[in-house]
Image 1 (tube, rainbow, N blue to C red):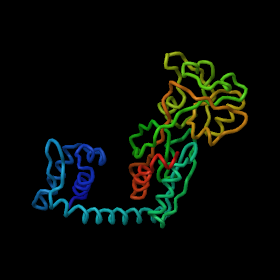
Image 2: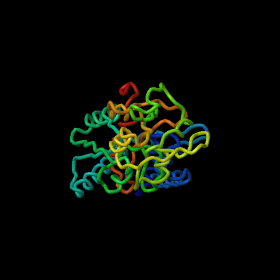
Image 3: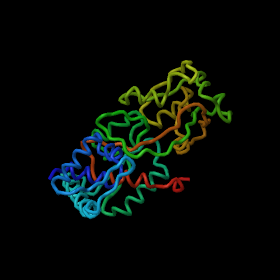
Length: 297
């Protein structure tokens, strides 16, 4: 029995949609259909009825699904436990975060602990300038990082709701007294950006080099951490675009936060290394996706 055939059936059974099942397994729809036909051939009967309008399980498929789902989860859990023991990190899930661990993240951690009391969840702040390094070096099992993410070796899971951005300026900056400003006004202050090893596309998203009108934005110093960035702002060396939630966490009297119109909202996404995907990480991603907005208001 091919494990990929079972995974294809489980994905279709849960999604009831070949496109979503294919996206979930990172396969083509034709490959999903091929795997499902192979499994049906082994069993000797149809498991899924598919029309142009809907996908549903046959009675035999409905009978097979719960038993197969339980067996598959047990198999994944056994492999994950062996892998965790081999790494010397049995019973620990390390989640990295950038900026601040806000209410949504903490609510997800609490809910995950309720379902997995045997697992200790550790939250680790990761450097502002190195969003992807910790998961690649296996310092964390997964990490909540600022988007965008375009790394072929990393999987992008749950994406959190958007948060508005503010411009962090020194308390004596002319913008500090403003109720708000437009992104086209960023030509008046150098923007602090991250240093390497963050990739260029990611750094450009956090500190754009041009306004929406196409005018150049002066470049400020490059920093490695959020604390370094805010210290540079307080010293009058530049301004910083920052998610409002993270800015509130780092509030201090020598800087001011000014809402900015005309810039994309900030979003966090959960990433992990494709080669080290685990049952626990997938469970945490699912829990993170179920945290309601009301939990973070």
